[in-house]
Amino acid sequence: MDMCNLAGGKVDGDEVSDLTKTYPIVEIFNSVQGEGIHAGKSSIFIRFGGCNLRCEWCDTEFDEWQEMSVIDILSEVMQWQTKRIIFTGGEPALQNLWPLSTCLRRRGYHIAIESNGTIELDEGLVDWVCISPKDQLYPNVSIKQRTGDELKVVYCGQELSMYDDLRIGFKHLLLQPCYMESESVEWNGRNAAHTEALVKENPEWRLSLQTHKWMGVD
Ligand code: SF4
Image 1 (cartoon, rainbow, N blue to C red):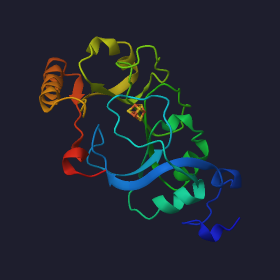
Image 2 (cartoon, rainbow, N blue to C red):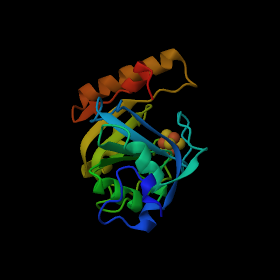
Image 3 (cartoon, rainbow, N blue to C red):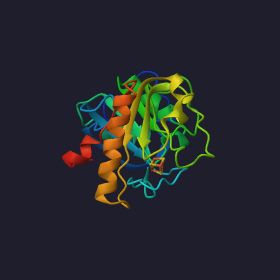
């Protein structure tokens, strides 16, 4: 293998099989995390193609991607200053993330994952687990990943009590108003106000807003 093309060079412990593993990648970009506990931090988003759900409000493109090797991905991410990586999608947990995670960590990256929770994650795979369950839409889809750092619930009118069991496994509870393009401005306004009211009534939950949408950034 030509390691001249590998940004930062080969690092002790790198396995050729890990460096050449490929992933379906929609996009890789540096932006500021817009929502959740880490809102405001410069982060590199690695968006994986494919998802096992089809949420009504989903505004993410995940059906078109290119295959990229770990070497290609490293070359991309190493052009930016931040050491914070976010695996997102689509549903990143559909992939075997160990080769990529291992190579990134060897280079000092902190790795977070945003997942819908329908696939259990291996212990120690990443440094930060954010689960955003979609069971308000898919009551028959069970949440397999029941522990993590951040439980981010997209609120669109469901009962908060449906998370009474799941929330036990998480350190931070976030409630984020769903923005539905198919609904009226009034509906979305009412839903945001209801989310805020719920946080006031249930202070163990924290309001999460999609600030990147206001800012008009990815
Ligand atoms: S789980 Fe996430 S990426 Fe998949 S369809 Fe739902 S909102 Fe979109």
